[in-house]
Image (tube, rainbow, N blue to C red; front, side):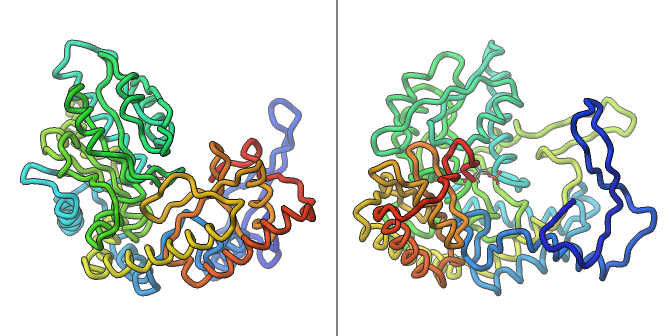
Length: 443
Ligand SMILES: *Cc1c(COP(=O)(O)O)cnc(C)c1O
């Protein structure tokens, strides 16, 4: 393994060998013959880390969510406290089961769940979504005399749905978003057929940051007798507080008729350590269809509520501690600051006539395009100025998930953006435009 600057200490024995195809020289890391002390390992790991983008400086537009160093500390220390406990075994570790049920219960209140509502903590949005689809599929299997099912989603819906549909043997049909870049009820309705079991509303979508018209999609779901899942993975723990503060964010939770399940990531705007998300259901009956039970093996009954078997208590403890540390007042205060910061970005973008914000994003996920075919060159100019840059392929755009880590660098970002646009227009930019979406993952 080669890492820039990794000179101080080598912890790995490597072997160079030819691949079976005799074309490629493989450089494999082998288990060291002798162990190595932690101090040296730590140095080596810090060297490895030096190759990463440092999320703490604000140059990353996504992937990490900051809510103050006190929150980071709570998230880390609580995680470490329950790192070795196993949420697979609630009898052995009732503490972890208790914290999971507390977090689910707090979230159900935030999302307007009634008495019958229930849910689980999962490892992340992808697992939450997979479980919602499993529950919908298994319920449909039980209630319908049919074996082939599909889901219908919008072009802006997260690929975790396609991944889950593949795993679960479901068809997945994508339809275009409307002119406002939100999920289009008419297009979704047009694709619903007698195999359709579920449709999705995003709150908001990851590429555009736009909250779909959940009430309209709820009416569609009821009329077509399909399950409406609300994917609030990114916005779930910000939207309720933004609504409470009076921001114009559409209703998206269990108060909306037709909503059967909601996914919301604790490890995004919930500010917990990574590895924590929520899958919530309006009805505990729907929830029970996500479980897995098996007993035909020597060790008796094996029941798991989520996909994982063994799972660390760390992420659950982290979510529990952060939610209790912040309380409603804390989330409201952070949301107020993030929404103010979002306004600063929107105003910054609006001073640049060459740039256009895509649609009307209601929260702090924003995509910006440029009239001409220049946005990826602008992104490249920004990359040269030290910004990581997240991209959207269609329409070509730069993408920013604004959180408090960006508070201290928003001015610099916007100034650099002005300079980058100017450089582009003056024709003085002669970069390679290597940030074209065909050559770079949009993450
Ligand atoms: C992040 C995200 C997901 C997937 O969540 P992971 O935690 O990355 O698995 C799904 N939907 C939306 C809208 C997201 O932003």
